[in-house]
Image (tube, rainbow, N blue to C red):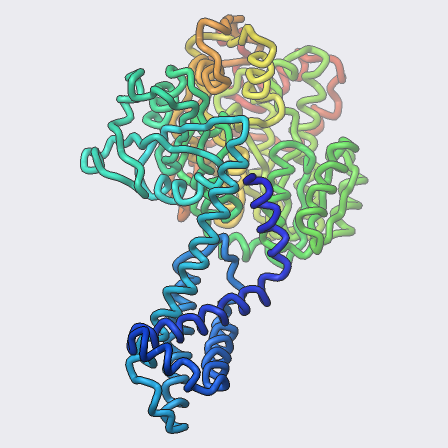
Length: 622
């Protein structure tokens, strides 16, 4: 039945303008008669009903329909009727009623009672509003019945704040029945939000009788942060009920999501970090209307850089990438989302000086973001990969930075890593050397602003633990963690890139900037949380400890022992005051060029001579 009702309503939608005017005109006529009936009584109304010329009634109806059209009333979708629609209807009724009363009096039609002229607009308002609200109720009931066919969905909502209130306003259209809300605010206990009772605190989620009948949990506290958020997720996971969440605060702020569009929990939801507050004007001044070049544009960080740079409408975006498919994929995505943005997909190797200089000379980028790098620590520690890592990360940075300076770039931003701090791996030491290369070039090329931005692990990037854990959980385990005490700093890819753009806008030449990574996360706890997010119990999927791999540390640092940070104008971007380090750039580049491509020990010795804080993991004892 409800499918037929929904189809019938759908068939009416293409004709909603004429139908709306026809229905509203009929309401005006009926209200006119009802108002006379109320004022005169049945007998007098019955005897006088033919006493008024039809043109008077037609004129009144025309006045109302004209007012409705001017106020945009017919444009409103009845199934979404809300306060804004009712306000427009009220203003149109009052305006039309006043105009009709003035015209009737001006024409000397004194037989029409003044009470009729005064009451008629309000009767029309009630009638028009009730018809629309009834349509919305019928539509939502039909959609709820259709959505609920074959599946009963009853939810407990975690949170009773503004997000929950907005959620309740739209969730029933998706076939949900909300049994109640849970919130820690004592003032809300026993209260009702949009007619739904607050049943208790979040800790009461552990009570089986409170969860009786619920099929799902819905997390509706997008602004909750850090450890408390993870505690609630752990409570929810212990119930065994599937858990959904409203969009994050950042998604809602950007306008890309509606509050009632529920989704499954993601690993980044565990972090619950504060949304980044960007200096949009400062970033726009750096990027808008200018040519921007990104190396490593097909990687996880490089691709996100391209997405967020595109938002600021550069004159041209040059995508430099060695991998053919990665370049194709990011170019296709960007061209679909920003069809008017000129894109230059460029296959190039950052170690190829001649090609790189030709690319930079042709496009003359104003800003360069150098994200091309080898980042996988154990893989780069292999003897046959160490030389390639150093060449790509150090020599590639030197070539890209020199090409940027030669092309007259305004700024060059190196994407660095927390593994460059007190490095114990070839990858970390190569990135520290790349930072030193950029700092050295800042004095040689004062016209270009050279900046390095250092941050920790990003969730979901290629080579990170999150995709690996997810795959292991899908296979049924075990989940492999190197050490029970290993901790890392994490942030999401969009968050990291937003802060990189902010750092690029405020950084001065030669500076190394570090991003506020928040609280460190224990890797084994992250694994347990991901197991629970997947709807599995701790005893269903085993966690195995495999031991530290070559080059790995138990914990990462954002600063070396002799370094300290200073604030910047951006709240979550800090400037590193590095301890003085002697550095011979020409000697380092010459040594890399001369080093045998398969001699890992020679590369380690070379890094040790240039990066004094480098201590290979074997020497450091892991």
